[in-house]
Image (cartoon, rainbow, N blue to C red; front, side):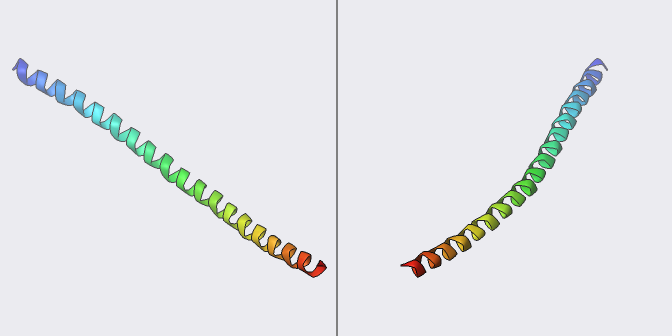
Length: 68
């Protein structure tokens, strides 16, 4: 009878550890998803800046070509 009680206690401990690990994994996933969307917005902004810089460089090249 004591062996069964010890087994149940051990299973309970394992269950607590598994639930703790599950909570950590869920928090980690939420953090990763949030970072993905934040980084996506940043990269989109950087891409738009890159396009604008290319457009300005082309305009400057045209202006300098006209002066020569």
